[in-house]
Image 1: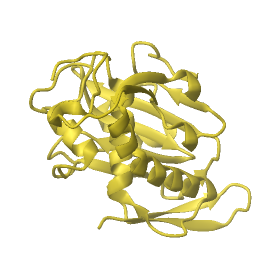
Image 2: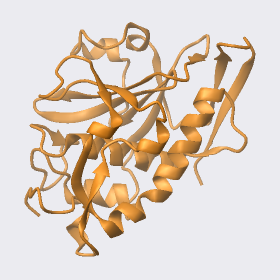
Image 3: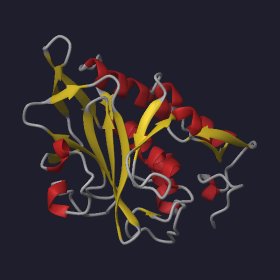
Image 4: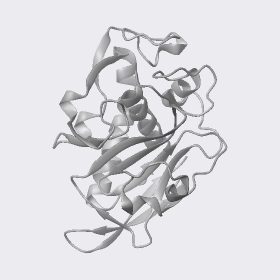
Length: 242
C-alpha cells in the first residue's frame, strides 16, 4: 500500500470500515494537562512543546481507531501508574508495547523516515505491512524488538507532568523511539535481532536528555522501582507478558 493521506495507515489487510476519522496522534485522554514535548521530526528538530489537541490528523478509519482503544486504555493505566509510582495490577506489557508502536507510527506518518530498520516493503513516512501487523497484534515482535526500560540505579523519580517523545534515527530509518512518560524513560526498539545498547554508545544525538544517555536498557522489564517525589516513598511498577 502506497502512502496516501486519504488512507488508513492500518488498512494493509483490507479490513477497514467506516470513514477516515480524526485521530489524536498522541492519545488525548492520557495527558489531561494537554502538553507533550516532541523532537526529531522536520517540524520539530529541536524539542518543541506541543498541545495534544493540535496533533490531530485523519490517518485511521473508524474501525481501526476503535480497535486500538484497548491499547489506549492499557497505556492510560500504565502512565497513571508511572505518575503514582505503583501498580494495582501488573501492566500488560504486550498491549503497552503495541501502544508505543501505534504512537510512534502516528507521529511518523508523512515524515522523511522509514518506520523500523530493515522492514520489508518499507517506504518513508508510512508503516510497512510488518509494522501494521505488529500494531494490530497479528504478529509478535521479532527477537529483541519491543519495549526497554532505561534503568536508573536509584530508581526513577516519577514526574506527573513530564512526557517526551522522539525518534532516534540513522540513515533515514527509525530504529528506536524514546518515550519519557511521567519520569519513566522507555525505548521502543524497531531493529530486529539487535539488543539495545546504552544510548551514549550510539553517539547520534547531543540533544538526548542527560539522565538517559548512560542508563542501562532492560528488555521487557518485569518491574522497576520508583521514588515518589512528594512522599519520598519507594514503590514498584510491575509488568506482565502473557
